[in-house]
Image (cartoon, rainbow, N blue to C red):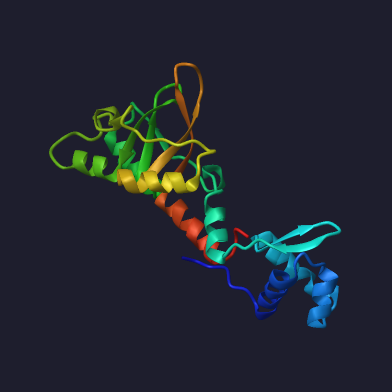
Length: 214
């Protein structure tokens, strides 16, 4: 578990607020023999990180939450739209050969298949294309619609879904990516507006380690 590392002075501030809160910034500065201006960055960090709460004309309160609890809360607020990537799509009439070329040129592990109206109809994985390549099939004449995974066997997500829920889907289904979709009409046609992958999930961890989510 990644935890937020505090400086020695920030730890001292937390101790003072725990013991004496609610307490104003001026009083905290007095106890540390520092100026209010010197403490302002530390108080801002502790408040933004969720360790402290501040109320006008009252002062600072200790929230009582640990770094791990605060981190968990932050992760549970992240949505797909914060981390989704641009989707790579192919038309369902495209050949398997063209799909293989697209996958390698775009350096992705999953392609989303759409119809002439740009609605999602299928998904192609590396395994699907590898399976089709084994044998004597004419890959240039074989359409991807023959080998793709079709609805309703496609797991999708929407931009407002939580990242942690999508991560669970990736693990549960043992897949590399999900299409981010938007419903277009009453017939439940789905437009692909993004993709969320294991790489995107890894970026969340990197941002956490660099305190980018404070």
